[in-house]
Length: 209
Image 1 (cartoon, rainbow, N blue to C red):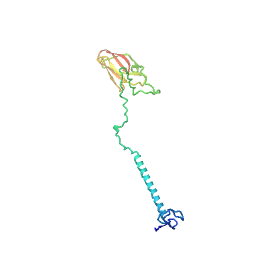
Image 2: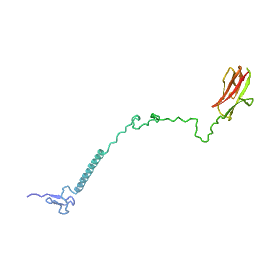
Image 3: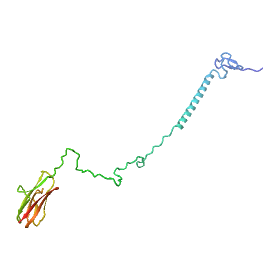
């Protein structure tokens, strides 16, 4: 006659026949591990869940690493190899055969409308002792002082005196402005004395006896 073993319920700790798959008293499954078998089963389940989570994290990390783009290394571009275009100087102008270049403006000129233009010479007058003269007589070695009067007063320009025949008379300036001269008789004859300021000229005949 065979002996049927008994099993202790892991839930209610009651003994029942080993032929039953469940405890006839509480309905618990037969495990053969005693009252702490459920806790062991729960621990095993938790470990399995944690293992799955760890695997998921590892896979996700690997995907992020392989899918992320590596930053391109920065390179220093030399200035001479840069793509910035250097503008050509504007002075290099190609002229056509018929092109005309306008002359540069006078650096002394001004566009100021209030600027007063310099006065123009209207007349020159040769005087002797304060009187106008255009013909006089002198002796050899005689010195005759003459002056020139410029109108209007204040016109710039140094008077230039000349003798048409220096064998008859010579002209010597007596002031730095050139407005006063001495005419000296050299030899007998007649010659022309000329004074010029700018574009204006005045003449006087000199007769030496």
